[in-house]
Length: 577
Ligand code: ATP
Ligand code: MG
Image (tube, rainbow, N blue to C red; front, side, top):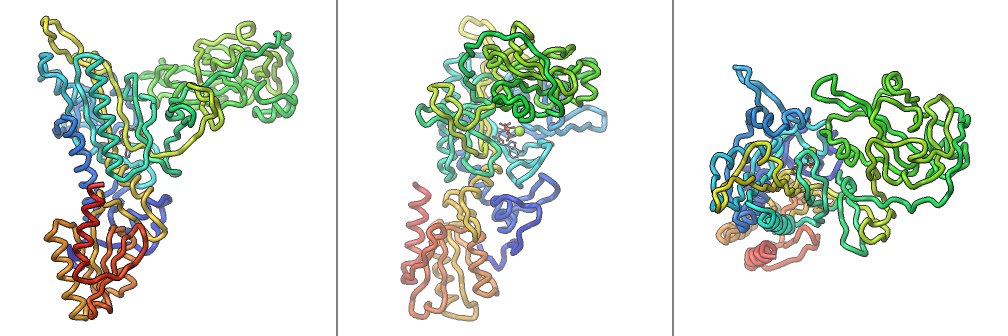
């Protein structure tokens, strides 16, 4: 491709709403353009890289025997009502009506659609196992779309769905997808970790998240260097502190004026935060107003609440919980902002962290302004409706498997795999007939890759202060040939012949034949991040050109005749790595 003919505009300035490198560089390289918040278009170079990622995904999915289909983004509400997710999916789902008032959504994911297809077309065990996938546009009206392609409202996802006759077969399908994902992300040049994950709104039991390591990522993972425990912090189990040996002392109400936070109370009473109980208050919404209720969650004062664990314990959709308006809640439950404890609270669901059960003589709010109660003990003084692990794991906590100190890392969730079991086949009636002609529920798995988020993750891991540094596998073009002075006959001839030779050898080549100053051309080449740059300049007359690998930033002078050959060999070596 000739840059002089190419539809491209690089930006010198950092766009105002771009905060992280991938967003900045994809915009500056002219690869993506914003339409509205969370909605982006792909320009020629950006679209080439997206297609290269898609091709890698396709190849690895096909290796595992998955078959590509393509379903519509437009989905009828009835299918989501069958699975129970029309309500459960919440405001992230983009809903619309046709001219006859029939309800639809723009698919945020496709479990219902694939289950529907398979239930009407699979009848016998002979048709299983089956794995169908698509690479398709998804819509999610994210609460906070941000970071460009990272969290957008329209994005490209590869979603695959497996259908098996029993758990053993599902395990095999799941393992196959897990392996395919490892290959895909490796080929995309990502440094990543596969970690245990929560199954969230998708449902099911077992799940792994593939996380590209990056400080700007929104995923947090907890891992252990002694054993191989690795999980998202949402998912990671926490170890309760050892039970206290103290004997239970009588409760004592004390004045604690103005001590609204755990820090304040602990300082005022001169106790460790570990000796306090923290209360967190929530309003839970249901499908109707009558179904709403209040929740008080209690954890030790030095711990953080893990919202995912609370949501799972309550068995509610993610969108159905909000921090309570304390004034409203106090009328119904007797809570008192900043002074709420488990004693004196009524008409709300009490969810208590398991650790509190065996700790003794703690300080809790008295449900009375400026008062706390000392020596509060579980069982004797209060009880929970639900007792469960509510803790968010943090650096240095005990590993739930081996007890060593936990490390924490950040990353970008680029893919996630789930064993769904019978969640959708049961609610939507997807059966097969076994050898004895008996109807059995199909076991399902689902497997997603954020294709456009992967593009952003790659840039996040592969850039420097001058621009993108594409791994060869996903580079929009492999080599750029730059003509320094367009007026110079020799430079033109040599550059054109190198360009031609590259094309003939199947290399994706660009030639910068624009009437621009050399400085502009070099800057653009850096921003675009093309892996190999061949510069044809003043020494062309002596038969010499410059050869530069973008990631090494080393310029070497080579014989013009050898240039294309060297580049072809390098490109093919990189692609076959
Ligand atoms: P997140 O927790 O980041 O919202 P998710 O768990 O909701 O992601 P899945 O439903 O598992 O995501 O979707 C599969 C993949 O699609 C994710 O692993 C991610 O790579 C991608 N993805 C999800 N939401 C977005 C988004 N808003 N923008 C871009 N990619 C996304
Ligand atoms: Mg999400």
